[in-house]
Length: 413
Image (cartoon, rainbow, N blue to C red; front, side):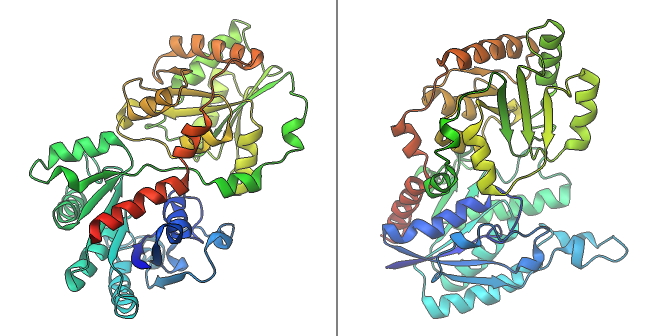
């Protein structure tokens, strides 16, 4: 088999990050497509939270090197404060040195054919760049989303450093990978001198094995309750997934008698911003309808998804070139989706191409009201659309890994 060195900060036992699934599933399935993965990640001490839930998904004979690295904010701080230079480009910059040392050791021992590094931790690309320079092994830079935008990351010094890492990657890497067409287009316009065949899209996806383990044939055959449950599973950012107009719509529908807590329950699972949303629920007087629920282990979160009457998706227009990774799990859960997003964004495109039309703008209270009433009615009469089996498989992690293997083959050829 050909070998690829995968450099990723997010890898089990990291806790509380959906980003872990991309590298984990690539490392699980690459062997099925002729590639032996070798994983270079950071020591678990650098993680803010750890969880053993997904350690079992790592193939037992897979080479995983956990290099030295610290979290500047937690382990290099004095009195709760730390020197800003020790957190550039990010709080895990110490992993750069550990990653170079451990990465060179892995290269000498296993002689990989390709180096692959993945964002959103910028230090991972710094390690990939350094190992590429010292070994001359082709490098694939997996950006996922955009690394820099006009006002991101905040702070001129940090922004300049990110843009420098970004420029090195797009100029030095054999391929640059994104998770959405919109981000690819953004970068092709930003760097018109870069050949078009260097840009590639490999979207995120869902893992069939995880869903097969989570499916409960007994619960799926239970008699539906008269009370409908709508679920949003995962982080709900106040800016990028602002639920304000949704809350306003619920409040107005409640006052009009169209909904109430006995007929509709909405679960916002692991929103991550309960301190912001709870006062909003009380202000809009919808705390009897909307529940801010705590995080669950990943397998339990999938079970909840499978048993919900409908699934909610939020994505603001300022993220039109991004697609929430959750959407692919929603497709596989085979539950109706009510999407609140800009109709012109990549998220809407993905939903519409999957044959789903239950979509309204996130920032329009009026359209949310009418759309939600229609969605509830379609849930009751069984006419809410679902993605087809062919569409669902195309979004699986195994299908995405096959795309990555083809890309790696093209790089070495």
